[in-house]
Length: 454
Image (cartoon, rainbow, N blue to C red):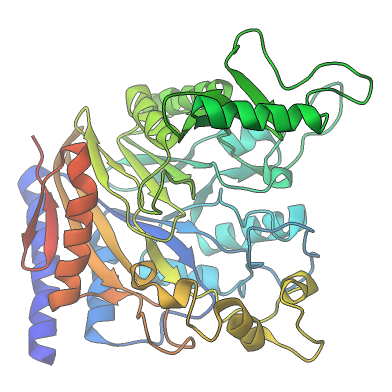
């Protein structure tokens, strides 16, 4: 078994070397969400070290850092991204040990511990030597691209989030009022479409409750531009033939982000745009419409790769103008059950007594592992995407299945290993199924997926 694992490691290294020598190309290792609460460097399983070698062997490597690093100097906000995320500051160096160069920071946990939590994370991430994007002391800083210098190419990273609590979004300065620190937001609108009878009943309900007038008797929730729609609690309800949901990206946000991309493309060889987006269209694995709208616009603006993360499952792959759109790579690390401490807000949600601790919170949240994340196999299945470029052309896109240990005890699961055999094939089959609607074909070669590039 050990000989087979060693041979597999040699094959990976040789394959990457062959790509680079044959094409003079540039390779990336791209991963999804990293919720890291435990060190990586002590582990020595062959499937783990093979995976680490893949990341290190690429010319650059990226992950979404869905974690804050601090020593509990900041206090928790009243609203978080769910579980309040915090890891030991030393863990930033573990990411560097694993081979990562760049991390995105815009996600729904960016502001769990307020501005100070964000600032301390920036400090530790940069001291470790990681290039990070997506947060800043102002909207302009949060929006801007950050750059990685390598011996082969200069890489730009733009990090965006559509899923976040309102207080986490960075703001502008005006009238000499300081800007709000935070993340790079992509806002969007949601319209619920209802058949005429249901639409009319809801409209009448809104009228009877006085929801279409202000306290001063002024009308609200209607627009002359949308005669067949009304707005309740920030969402539009539109009359249509059948029920559905339509989402649209905020044009101002999209235009500002794409201007950054156009600038970055003039200053870098490759541009990566990454989004943290939970929003879905029906099942968790199908992205909301606005995500595709935004993704294609970033490619038009000059992005070479679009990387999604956030829903904690794999989503499909689209090829657009020769560039890959990876709607979600799933989880790379998912160690949210081994946090050191949690604030009272998390315990209060489950009416837990004062002598309850993190394990008790996990037990209450997931009903002893029978519901939620621990019970869903797909949460613990993902891929590492390895695009290879020959100049500006994508020459290959390889997909390496990984497992995070579904069904293992909570002190073990959450750390990635290469998936092998039936599990690897299952993960790739899921990705094939989810990519087919985009017209993308994926070939399974001995447990590694390869996207057919036209």
